[in-house]
Amino acid sequence: MMTKKETEKFLPSNLLEGMTSISALLNSDCNNDRKIERVWIDIAKKSTKAGEIRFLTAKSKELGFVIEFVDAARIDEITVGNTHGGILAFCTDRTLPVLHPSHLKPNGFYVFLEGIEDPYNFGYTVRSLYAAGVDGIVLPARNWMSAAGVVARASAGASELIPMFTANVEDVIPVFRSLSYTVLCAGIRDSVSVFDECFRYPVLLVIGGEKRGISRKILEQADKIVRIDYGREFRGSLSAASAATVMAFEIFRQNK
Image (spheres, rainbow, N blue to C red):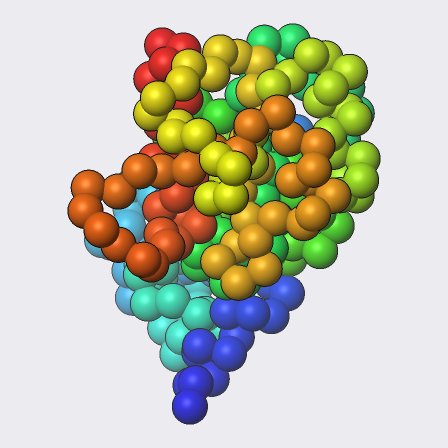
């Protein structure tokens, strides 16, 4: 049976917990229109968080948000995690633009994430893709960015730093095809090892969730189905985050 905190991770929320997530938003220079409206700081941490408070105070004057000092109990009532350090930011929604060829780099590396079941797994995936130098992430209309606070924390702020777009499944491939992108789908049937072939940019990599995988509409249009070869006999599958990490870094390595 899930606790209240565990169930809340699935709920829509624009509450960023902790300075890692908040700083990522404040330093974002991608297509992120999310704004901070109010910051809560644990009143008992005024001395231990002096540096963070000075930074946030300066930003509040620049950007026009309010800072309030509150009791720790009020913070604990509304947070999902326990690593916020007593600092929270109440934010607006982030608008994800509908994918268009004008959004894409001519020689870039993008990933379409489809069907990931859990906001933490989604956040871990985004963290790895950002670290691997992916230029942007495409998402279906229904996605975990509604749970922005959990995703930002799981991704170590990367979800606020990387460009993101939405698209209907049937529209994704034509947009990338118009710019001569190679389309790779993670899978097993009729696949080649991602380690055995060289995939030069521009590349669109499609990663599906563990349960639902990649939709047939996408698979049928892929240039290649790519798999990860294991180091031993293993009938299981990697998590979406692990698979995305291995494939994205291998493609990055090939183009480095």
